[in-house]
Image (cartoon, rainbow, N blue to C red):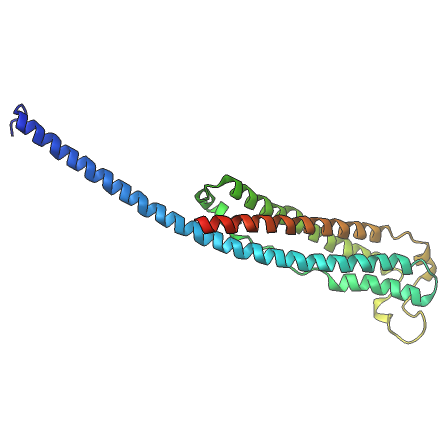
Amino acid sequence: MDLFDPAGVRKFFTQISLILISLLLATRAERCRESGKDREKLREYLTAIQTDIKEEIETDQMNLNDCNRDLKCLVQFFSKGNHAHTDSLLAAYSNFAEVYQRGVFRAFPPSTFDLMVQSGDANLLKDLHLRNSLASVFAFRQNVVRKDLQDFDLQTQVCAEKLGRFFDLSLMFAEGEGAFLLDKEGFLRDPHNEVFLLLRNVNLRAFHLENAIEDLQGVQKELDVYLKKL
């Protein structure tokens, strides 16, 4: 082909143009396929996060209910513990024993959003407001709700050890009035600061759980709207 022949030049550029157009179309098709895969992957992540949020709200609500019961028991501990009568002291310690035995049983496995961040797939979520909202509620779960639980468990153990100087739990329901009391006068003199600290911890836990539930419900609605548009 003579490249200086006008017809040859036109033919040459026509062929080049067809090749470029084919490459462009192939690239665009590949991007569409990748975009479709990313969209489906994001949908799977967000659907799993929906489930995580629903379960977290339910768990936080159960823990909040337990917190409210703990608050009532600890208030009763101080109310009944101010009286020297054996029945009142038994009621006081029984209320603490209820808090101790109820405890809090829950785990904090990595959430789907945590796994999404660790894998680098958080970038699939282009809505920065929603991404930040999700990051916030799951960080609060890990850094505040979990820490509250650890502090509660630790302080409960401290209380059990200190109150053990005055009461013998194994003898609480034994025959013989006051058999469970090891040091009645010592208990009445003691300010029980460790139980005040536990009460403060329970109050703080309840406050944080209420905030966690409210924030989770807010991001749950935001996520529902986003998924409908996705």
